[in-house]
Length: 197
Image (tube, rainbow, N blue to C red; front, top):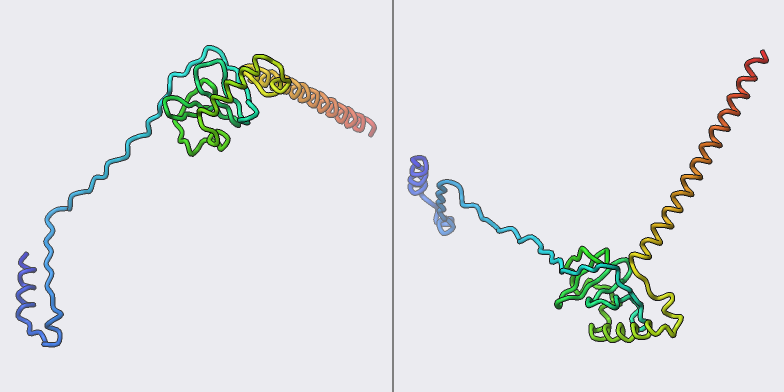
């Protein structure tokens, strides 16, 4: 502090030329301690809502031609299947899941597939109900290729996978047998060559 007072006294005593006198300014800053830290609160963690949609068995999904995607029928929930994802509309909110029974994660309307967004919810329900009536009457062969139950298709796919794995294991065993047979043949030929000398 004494040094600062001495410097100020010396600066005041020095004559300033009239040219530079107008541009002279004195700035004194005193810091005591460290400045307080600015605390920015962290954003709250995202909240995932898991609506209580639990089904005892997989629902039937049909694909009404007017929609171009599958809708669940015969259940009190609005569930749709597009690509490999299930979508649920409930309580004015949208959810998505990898399975018809969840786990459901909140999703924004803008992220829904275009096929789903291009129809109003009322229009989707209308086509769903009309399609389901037509499906139950069974008059059109169209429905043979445009319906599914998730678990049954999953079981069918799992069965096909098991068959493929079985074939691959069998082919692998056959390759190993051929390899051993070829090695034995090479060893037996090598052994005959050693006896002839």
